[in-house]
Image 1 (tube, one colour):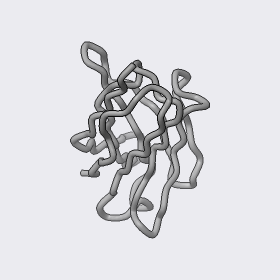
Image 2: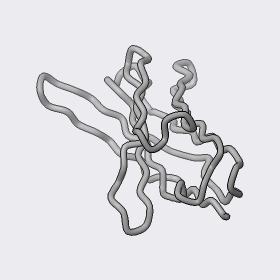
Image 3: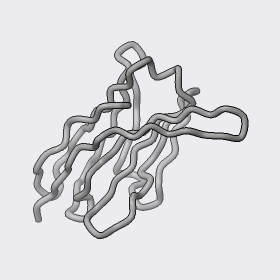
Length: 117
């Protein structure tokens, strides 16, 4: 399972970079996803990076969130700019492996991000 880090307590308007270390190598997976879950809310897909490098972002974070990766370090990053209190959540990284029409995702334990107003 991937391991997230980089969360913490930040103020509105600040930036944060979350890290996801993928054991076994990023390219052994078809995609790496970032999710978040705020208290009382369902888990939300923040964005993804596919094995070929293409990225996708949820509508609520477009323009403020950027996913990148360092294949040599087996690491995927989630850069968050202009944080707002609504970004407060536990952020999870998940690796995905596809076999035919089936798909398995492996979720990390998450890292807490708290944005104060």
